[in-house]
Image 1 (cartoon, rainbow, N blue to C red):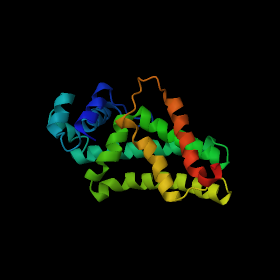
Image 2: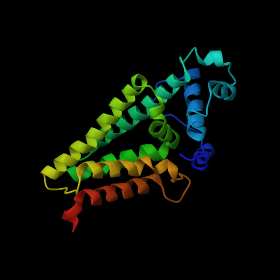
Image 3: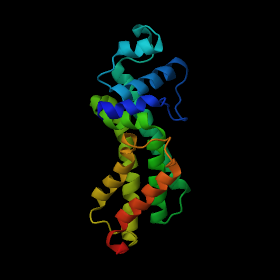
Image 4: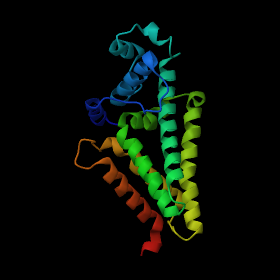
Length: 214
């Protein structure tokens, strides 16, 4: 994300999903790190920067996290976990018909990225700053989320509901619609999140129907 795009994220306070279990000082550290990592970048934020904003000594941070990388790993895990839980809940509440399940998944995917843009940026851009060991929990969750959509698409193709020219490419394009939201979407605009989510769902179905829509 370019510096100019990152600066957009400074205008809105960073927040963690309601389901986040951390509280007290640990939560403050995570929320502050989220704001700094999203607006400045992980590599351009030091432990001293984080401690200064929190008005703590750098040593106080190490009582909660072993390193800056561990702070990032926890944020990335939280983001992927919240996203996966949102997709699971949407799928559980959706009708069994594949088109309705795609609508539900895409709406949930869109909402999580639109309502937590800082977390979305950190999760998607900074994951690769982690060692494989620290990234593993988040990557496992990401793979599970990817599989949820892939399974619905496969079922829809078997039932002749979908006919995408290339299922994997189409699934990636559907996911990218949500991932790109922090780069352009402003929650204060006239386009509300529900309308945006519905628009993304409609676009996803058009991509998946392919020749069936012609």
